[in-house]
Image (cartoon, rainbow, N blue to C red; front, side):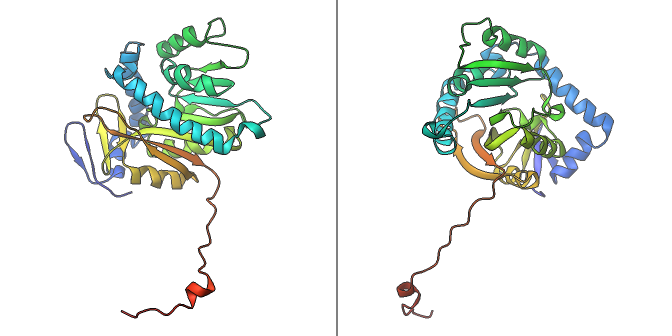
Length: 276
């Protein structure tokens, strides 16, 4: 990836490598990068407005568009008439449990939450814990992991869907790749990742305040390739305020896409052509 980028103060970088070398190029810098990122969110209140950066109004269109996408994925990958097992999801960067509460717990029998900010996770536990009315015998939040993405390894073969939203920007490129390579082990056969993230128009944008990077579509796809992942489906988020970054959803699989043979019929192949 050699596209240029910039930071939130307008400073330009020639490439991601230049930026990452400066920000996390040795163990001390890398430790500080992650520490400062968590510290930023530790100073944010555990509320809808807090986790959405003052844009609580995007919750409804966010969930609506995500649900449309998820329903298509579930119907194609896990059709109800062929399903003989419970569906299990992992909510990465779960925050206060917003996505689990409003989306995942309605479509999955079990949901685990992964969040490095302890007071966010505690708020999620209070809302979604086993003693709460949100839980039922058939749809419930099960595990609450207070672990950062870069340090997490899932239980082998537990998840049908690993949902990752608005958190992968905190990972360096190397940790992005190593996370997905580890997390593959956590997928059941036929399982997939759903990544939902902000998009830069080109290259990348470094946020100096919360220590995160917004990547372009091309940047993401180059990282997916390094992870050994393939885009099964994608969808653009609709209905967000114009001043926000564009947002895109990617359904990612470890399966190599099947090639479609586009052979021409004999009649088509033998048809005379005009040579230009």
